[in-house]
Image (cartoon, rainbow over all chains, first blue to last red; front, side, top):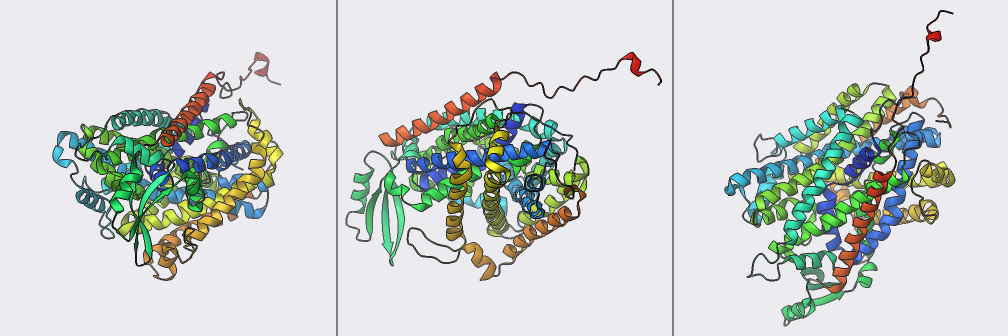
Length: 575
Length: 51
C-alpha cells in the first residue's frame, strides 16, 4: 500500500480544483449549443432534473468513496475500487479511471492550445486591426489552417497562426504545474485561475448584454433574440421536404415569430411552419439524452478525477458541502455565464441561422472569432473570452493528469517526479498522435467518442452501482456525512440506490442505440453510426490506430496492476 | 424573447447564483481548518537520559 504523503492545503483549494476540473470549454460552447438545439427552456427542465438525479449523486458518491479509500492509502481509481470491492476484477475495472482522463488529456491539450493561440491572435489584433476576422469563409479557413484540418501533419508548422507553438507551451505548462504537486501546483493554479476566469467572463457578459442591435439594417439580429433562441421553451421552425426527407431550414425567435414564419412560407408547397411547445419537446427522448449527457460531461462525473482528488482529503474534511460547492460553481459558469454570453453574441451579429447547429468547435472557433472581430473593442473582448476558455481548459487538463500520476505512484511505488516523467512520455506520444492525424480532426474525434463519451458512461455507471450496492448505501451515507457541515436531504437515498443507476442505464442504452447503432428516435429507424462505419465498413486507419492507442494503454495499465504488490494485500477496514 | 423564456432564464440564473453564493458563504463561514496542523511532539529532558 502506498503511503499518503500529499494532501490539499485547504478546503477552498480542493473545491476550486474540482470546480476547475469541471468548468471547461463545454460550459461556454457545448452547453449553449445543446440547450438551443434541444428545446431552449424545455431543455432546462430536463437539465435541472438530470442535475439532481445524476450530477449531484454521482459527484457525491465519488467524493465519499475517494476520501474513504484515501484514508486507507489508496489514491488511484484502481486502488479505490480494490479498497471498496476487495475482488480481483475490481482493480481492473478501476483502470478505466486512469485511461479515461489520460487519453482525454492527450487530445484536450490540443484544444487548449487552440484557445491560447486565439487569445494571442486577438491580443495581436488590438495593435494590428488587419488581424481581425472579416467574413465567415476567412474565419473557417483560418481555423482549418490553424488546426491542420486539411491534411495529416499539416499542423506541424511553426508559426503564430498554427497550433504547434501553442501546443508545446500548454503541454509544458501542464507538466510543470503537475510536477509541482497537488498543493503547490494544481491547487495554486486553480485558486488563481478560477476567480480570474469568473471575473473575465462577467466582463465579457456585460459587454455582450449591452450590444443591443448592432446592425440597424438587420433588426432581427439582436441580443434579445439571442437570449430568446437560448431560453424560449417553445420553438417556431420552418420545415422543408425534399425527396421525402424533412429538414429544418429556418428558426424564428421573437414575439411575432409565428406570423413571420407563416408569411415567409406562403406559396411554397414544400415548406411548412411548426410550433413546438415545451411539453411536445420534452416528449422527445433526444432532449433528455442531450440534457443528461450535458450534465454528465459538464460536471466531470465519471472521469475518475473527483475520486482521485477526494482521496487526498484528510479524515473529517467535508465532502458533502465541498461536492455541492464544486458542482454549483460549475453551474454558475455554465448557466449563469455560458448561457448568457455565447448565443446572444452570435445571434446579435449573425442571426439565429448563423449560429444554429454549429457544434462546439464551429461556435467557438468559427462563429465567435468573427463576432468579436465585428464588435466595438472586439479584439480586447475577444482576447478576454478566449483567455476565459484557456483558463477553463487548463484547470480541466491539469486534473486529467493526476489520476495517471496516482496510479503510477501507487502501483510502481515511485515518487511523483518519476511518475510525472513516465506520464509525460506517454502523453507526449498520444498528443503527438492526435496532433499529427488532424485531417478532419479524425483522431481527436474518434478518441473523444470512444473514451470521452462511451467509457465515461461505463465508469460512471460502475461507480454509482458500486456506491449504492457494493460499498453499501448506509455506509456510503455515513461516510458522506462524516465531518459534513450540511445534511443531504433524505430523498437522495433512493436516488443513490435506484433512481440514478436506473436513469443512467436508460440514458446509456439510448446513447448506444443512437450513437453506435445509429437509431433515430424521431423516425424510429436504425442504421450504423459513422464511428462504427469508420471502423468496420471503411476500415479507416486513423480510427483503428486510435482504438489501438486506447486498448494498448488499457493493457499496459492492467499488466502494471497485475504485477504490482500494492494490490496483493487485502485493504483494511480501519483508516 | 417570450415571457416564458424570460421567466425560465431569470429563474435558472437566479437559482444557480443563489446556490453558489450560499455554498461559498457556508464554506467561508466555517471555522478555520485545524487538521493540517502537525501534532506537537513532546520532548522532555528525561527522554535524553540513557537507560
